[in-house]
Image (cartoon, rainbow, N blue to C red; front, side, top):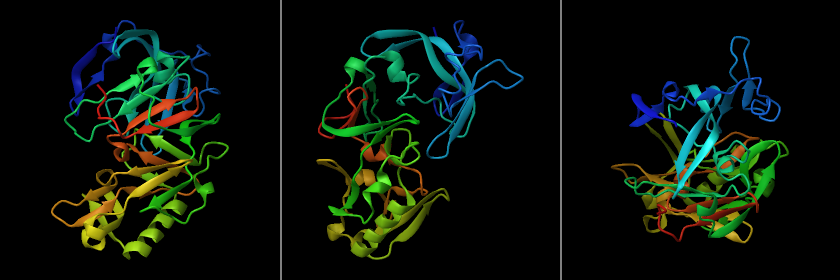
Length: 322
């Protein structure tokens, strides 16, 4: 059984001290089924000449990265009931840029947590409350809340992302002037639209972002820029006096037969002690994936049903899930 030690702490969380687990082991390069470089491309790197451990290396869409060893352990999950994975596979990082205590891998591959828990039915859902005092949960398999508005999910054999079919982006129900092909999934999964629970902000490719900027200028005039603590930089900011009744425009994401409108508090950041409001959409690069970030989906139940190829949004229930 895994034991969590308090010898090292970061932001109130414990690091996993693998030396305290008698069942922990690093996956060997001789284990070709689990250390499959071809199947695990580009994440599984295999072994260096000076080690027998199977290495992984991941770079996330926001630029953060982590590297370490593919590992296994006995792990117990309490998800309404107790479920133990005798050979739970995970990446044990020894170097990363994010400085986070750990990330649950929910990608659409066989090593993801949903598929390890329920290989035949890897559904899962989450609902993150805007009330930061709340404890939020992720529900797996039969416990998952697969409800609300279904959106077509696309599978790409060259990528583990859950791509969804975005048709366009709207500002107060007016579409930005960008071709739908900008959001279409490319053959190798280097372009398209995803929902990323691990990235707080929404990113659009430069082509789509430029179209968003053009629409804002048409409606409200040239924006101003604002930088927070020299790190977070917003390019589209307006004094609330520019908006009708001081309310910023509603940003929507258009899918087939459904328009997901993001509520104001999730899409616009109010600068403290100021009347300035900034759009929480960042400018990505061309030929890259566009993504809807987790902050824009606060108080929305998000459901994944890979077997049926459907993604669900439900903003009618109370978060967090019980």
